[in-house]
Length: 98
Image (tube, rainbow, N blue to C red; front, side, top):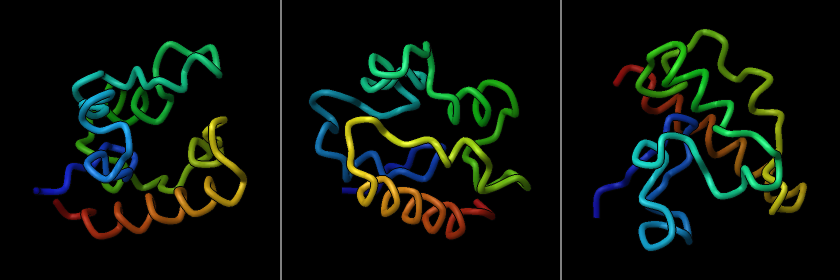
């Protein structure tokens, strides 16, 4: 299966919720399940990257990594979040020119 990456650098197709519970951020327009914990209506990374700046992914942004990557997923541990943020940035560096 071909890898599917969200705008933040998360590989959607590697996520335990994909595709049964979540078809991917682009398909759900950034309205991820964990927003119920934050009270937001849309993922702030998705809002900035896709809705505001009209980038395909954050790797095209000169501000990467920005403060939005400092926000943790409330369903994960500190260590899991740190590993996720590192992985996201590394994925985006690979796809910067795409």
